Image 1: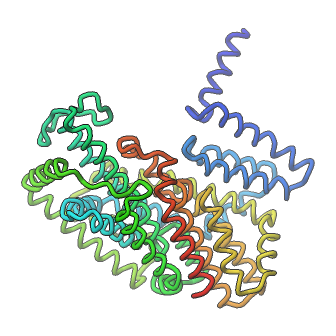
Image 2: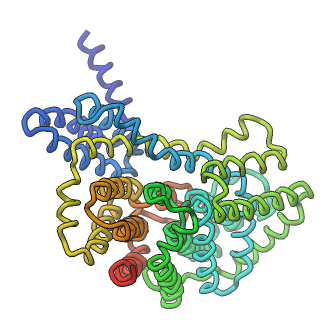
Length: 505
């Protein structure tokens, strides 16, 4: 009987959080046991702060376990022990429903534009012979697209380009042909011949640099507009800003940051520092050009028509956002309808695949709102907000920028922005400051959470997505390497953002 019980307990422990490390599982269990004890001994304020710090820990450890499960358990416990209630959580979710619509429909809508985005980045990669120009174009185009579509989708497209080209050359390096359609394992170098081994290593470094330039580009563009990041729409909703006003309010900070980011991109490529500067080997270029020419020749009239439909849909989406003709999420739904109708996608399962990418993060966002409900119910951030608001008004935006940036570098920027904008909104409604000062604080919160979050993969969903994607191990892109490669961007963009918030708002 004892052995059966032990076997059942082992199975239960094995199932709990799956393949997460045992130390991580024990930590989460300790959190769940510890919180009620803190509530009884020290009260709800201390227990609430413990829960928030524990939730930030789950965000920081996202590579060990997706935060939805451990964070969700913490949120459920918070409601069970009375740190908040389901009504408050519901109110938070409803208040931020436009953000949920954005994630569900806009990401799915852009899913049906992947072919035209893939086509665009492919032509850029093979059309620019100068690495400086190529790096600049990848960063700029990623920034431009991320200002109008979801950064995760832009990152996914760039990853698809990188994986596709890596697989083509890896096949050649392994003694195959770039025209072959036979299955090939490009995750192992066992069959790579000596003549191609050095070129393959340089090609990896080349792809790494482009991936990082593009990832930072998504942050540069994402901070600029209402749809660039999920928290942008949340902040715009609190402030009552439409697409144009949001852009103009952010521009004194975001435009200098964008310029500084593009200059940094060119500079680190030119000097070849922090892991940048690798050139595309000529043998690799020749193989990729031959592959692209063959793929273009095989493209049918139907496939060309699909590209035209997707391109026109992209232009209509940009126009709809700029003119604010409808709620952002509804524009995403309109894009889905138009593209699927005119490209013949009428099967439910094919349409369903477009929602796969967005829904896990949408679920996590609802957990964010549950933790925010705890913060509101227990007034956890009130002392911090009151301390900042007691400072000289001129220094308050820059202090919010620094505080948001630091937290966003170690946890998720959407969560940080959600917490701060809600607290500042409450203070404004209580008459703590003027509307103009409220506008400045909102800009500081948005730029602080978006700019500094490039420091680590924890801060931005697009960075975390890149690190956990199939391309990362292929091009040897580790967590530490991402942090090192992001360092020059972190310093330059962080300083420029601070200057913009402190002097130009």
